[in-house]
Length: 168
Image (cartoon, rainbow, N blue to C red; front, side):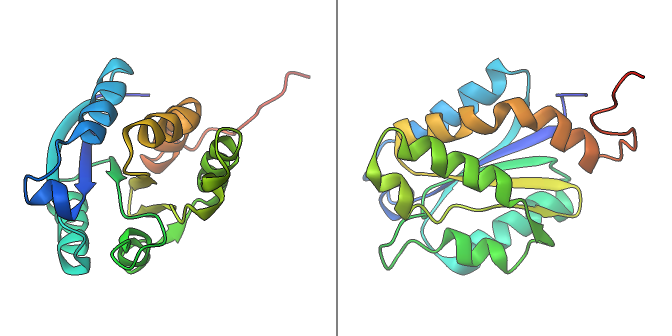
């Protein structure tokens, strides 16, 4: 699997977009991805605005050709937490196992893990993963899906080899 596939980190935060909060989650997500050999080519902070979320995701997939996008923020229950709703409007399908794994791991650390509405989905050949906006939540959730990323991205990029081939 070629980990040099173009990758983006999108921070969704009203305070972050206004410069009222330092972007710790984006730094952490980008560092984790780069430590794993991924090439982060796109980074941006935008407010919790559905149109901006949709427009950025579509540009990064359609025009920039990213293979992986990790969003951070907007996955909770407040009225401005709209990342999942915006993402659902542009993805072709969800990858529920990844979101379920992130929630299950979060629940081991805090009961608040059960209120995460983060989703993981695919548009064309791009995997889009929502993680929480908190630095710890972003790091922990991304770390949970890392072991499956190579395989998922390989399949999205066209790998047709059989999965879980057993020797006879």
